[in-house]
Image (cartoon, rainbow, N blue to C red; front, top):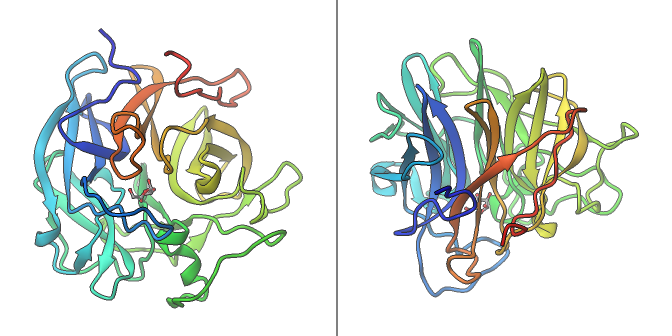
Length: 324
Ligand code: FUB
């Protein structure tokens, strides 16, 4: 029986799934949502995660296994709280877990941890990646290079770093001003620092103009993901306030990207966050929603569904509940 569009695990709440195929097996790196009765706010204070568990599947028809504790907040010296959406990468014979969390000053930073196994346990570096800030790291390894993409608005603090320094009361652009984009850097050979100065990716509209901050149906909010299909780079992300997963394409992993369309309509719950991966010659979207918790924003559940392309490379929009 297919578990497509069903919760991958039900014994804990999981979100923000970054899926990969390592050595022929499927691994999913999710956030681990913790149930509590606190209020939701625009700062994301309800997302109180403290550790990571890696999920794995032999195939998309098989049981999804929770491989236990992979990394805990208490083992990372620089972290104060809120271990948000992670990603993982394989390079140099090692597995690397990238994760955002608040440092001791309350600023989100990106950390890295290493393991010989894709399911951990992971050993973290003592400090965050120098020069990193904000949330939602996504790493793409291509040949000898590894690229990291990251950044999210509001609770993710991206708009507070526009000067390169943290400005607590800074607000993002609005109206016709160009929207902020995700940040991007090349990773060092050891995968633990930035080799290039981080830059903001540009996302353009059909006329080659930057997507505007007021264009909330298309502008970047959080949750970047990069994948390559038929020689093109696809940057996909969440639009946040309008709750879409959308994409933009480029001939280069560093852009500029041109807006392409919508991948998924809103799911139950405020956030939407995904990854895209090829498994056995087909493409899949891993995502989360709050259906299992009856719509509680910080009690999310990871699912997957097939993602299809049209002949021209555009992506067919997914209606998350049209199978019900
Ligand atoms: O899980 C906490 C935050 O919610 C993530 O970092 C965002 O992408 C959103 O899914």
